[in-house]
Length: 360
Image 1 (cartoon, rainbow, N blue to C red):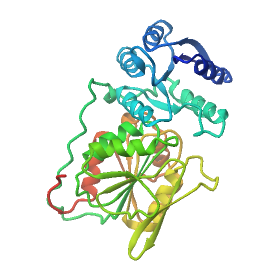
Image 2 (cartoon, rainbow, N blue to C red; image 1 turned 30 degrees about the horizontal axis):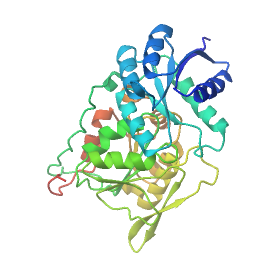
Image 3 (cartoon, helix red, strand yellow; image 1 turned 90 degrees about the horizontal axis):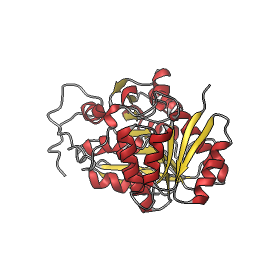
Image 4 (tube, rainbow, N blue to C red; image 1 turned 135 degrees about the vertical axis):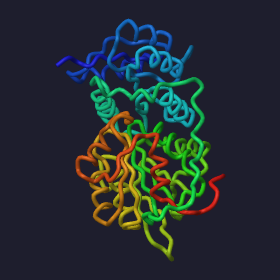
């Protein structure tokens, strides 16, 4: 089996050496070259034709963003960003994902217990994207500047039928930030259920994600905090490094956050999100499983289905990685499969009722 060819782009000699050392630990990967700038990265990508590129977010010259745009336009080679653990680093990373990067890792820091965690994360992502056919769907072809968020969907008169949903739980991983930017801003301000959201991310990235979605959306999007009430009109993003618990208090559903007990591969976990939503809302739980690698969500969605809930899954063609939605579908847990561009309208349809104008 041919090895995955990787180009490493970073202006730091130390970081280039560290990433190369991580990659060379795998017999399935061949580092075909390195580059010290965005300009050099673009040139070497054309010369070496790598299967995957790792790209520093912040570099002098044209920088990581422009390099991502040029490489993606010319070759669509999967690019994994290496992001600093700062708000600025997070914002630039989200922009890079909009321009065509497929995923990101955080630079080694306190977000990881040790360098082995970084290495495992990076090798897993390269293994996924190094396989031909896992590149993003054509819908992700970038434009400059990035397109404006979709206008919220208007809600008309209720149909003669509907399920009485009380809460929407959305889980996603790889490709999630871009997918969420197509879903959350398209929902009306009077979307009738609160939304709980898990996006697999390193520590420090969920708050910038929430802020970014909030600026684009009619709904109020915030990073979840201890004691928050799960209320209509809000999207609560479970913070990285915590698992969600839901408790009923004086007729309200209240957020509690806890450390993981060691049983979950992901913190936060879509399994925990779906199970907690199912336990709190029963048949009123509406689950949504979007793009992502792995199988997180299957166990929790099974509980949600057992308690009478309903599940919407993203289709393969519009997923960056058809892992989590596929696992849920294969397990027989998905009631309805839709392309990304129809997820928001599907949620509005399923929760359809008359509740006024949909303006902010």
